[in-house]
Structures are given as C-alpha cells and as structure tokens.
Length: 325
Image (cartoon, rainbow, N blue to C red; front, side):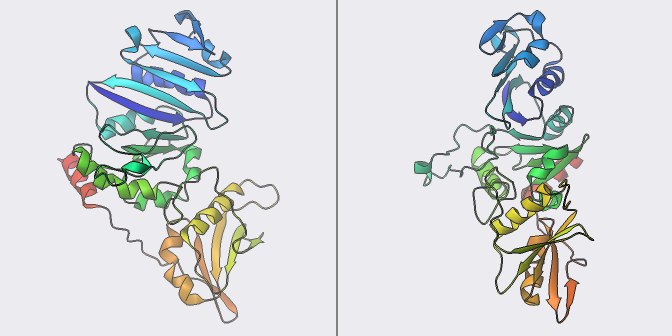
C-alpha cells in the first residue's frame, strides 16, 4: 500500500473536495467529518463543505485508513490537501484521475523519506533545494499539474512543453509535468528531479518560470502599449535583460489580458542592439515573448523562423520507450 499526497489549488474548495471524493475514493465519505473544528454527521455531506468558513476535514474509511481531504482557509490561494492509500498507480493513471477534478495548480509530493530539504543539510548527497509554488502547495516532488486558467501561473505553455521534464497532457486542458522516472531509486530520482525543480520554481533569480505572488514588474525597461496590435513592448538599450526580468515582464503582460483600457494579446522585447536581440531569441521564445530589433529606421521581428531545440533529459525517453512497449 502506497501513501499518495497531493495539494490542489482551486477556486472552489468544496466543489473540488466533492470531485476528489467521487474520483479518488469512489463515492461519499464513510468516516469522520468536520467543519470549522466541529464534528458533523455523515448526513451533512456535502452541504457542510459550503457552510465551512475556516476549514473542513473529511476522512474516508474507518479511522481515515483509506485517506482524507483537508482544507484550511489561508487567503485566496488556500490549497486542498488530499492523502490517500492506493495499491498501485502509474503516472498515466494518476493524470487520468486528476484531470476529472477541477483545480488550477496541483503538486504530487515526493515519496522518498531520505530526501533532505533543510539549509544545514546542503552537504548531504541526498539534499535537494527547496522549490515549490507556495500558496498552500508543498515543495516539488514527483510532479506538478496545471488545468485551464492555472496555466497562467507560468510564463507560457511552451515552457511546460520544452522544460527538463516529461510533459503529459490530459482532458479538461490538463498538463502534467513529471520530474523523475517513478521506477528509479531515491538517489537517482534526486539527480533527475533537481533541474526540473529549479526550472519550475520561482525563488531563483536565474531560473524558474512560475509566477509567485511576489512577481512584480518594476520598470526595468521602458514599456509602451501599441493599441492597434494590442501589444506590450519593452524597449531595451545597451543591455541584456536577465531571466527574472523576462519572467516579470511576461507576468505583467498576462495580468493585462483582460484590462478594459489596454488589453494585451501579445508582448515583445525591442532591442536597439540587433545582436543582443538575436542572441536572446530562445530565452524569449520559450517564455512566450516576441523578439524585435531596430535595424536602421525599421523594427523587425526576428523570432518567427526560430526552430526550438531544448534537449530533454535521457530518462524522459527511457520512460516513453517503456510505456510504448
């Protein structure tokens, strides 16, 4: 029996809890229920979920032996916790289940107790740096998922497709990012997971495509809005913008999509030095940002013929070959 732990950030914790109960536990709860720290009879399911103002807890099976669902309000970004015990699973079966549940972002925690996370454990060979979404999620482990509007929490869908991980797709506009081969041992899993964890994080200034609540554009470049093209333009003179700036600019563009005064459908960096612009095409393209350069008295787009080549780790092909057999 394996314990599975995942967090689901959602716009409606009660609705998601009902879906988790149906999909992951096969129906109505058969154990302890509580809302706002008050025990409730099973007959109050599921209405007690909508009545809960601070928290709810739902157990499945005698003494929660099959698992439980728990939620505690901690701002708008509160995530639902689900713990369950399963006989067996595969990444594809897990994706098939989770895509039937409404959520924005999700994390599937690691299953290795010997992984080290604390700062003073950095010299341990089993140390893996902290990386995660925050907002009620746990640190990255086996996989993360995005559904619908949750994709707007990363710089672009290209980033999810081409990152150093295995990308899977499911119904209901669901994307799963798998960080390591589920069949390897703990030490191998750490080696495989480290690059993807960093690339999917937000705390590193040089890596990370996820938008945390602290991501803000701070006028690092002159920004103009072109109403005819519904396009946000960052003008760069004599410098090379770092990755954290690209992430912040992309976040600004996404946040303005529905702006009533200047809706943004496209965003671009415009370089007065064409050499710098052409050199940064891959970094901009994968983040969903167009690349333009000033050549004489003309502005030219230089990324339209870009052919992406972001090599995947060898273990990704190993998994795909095994699943194809």
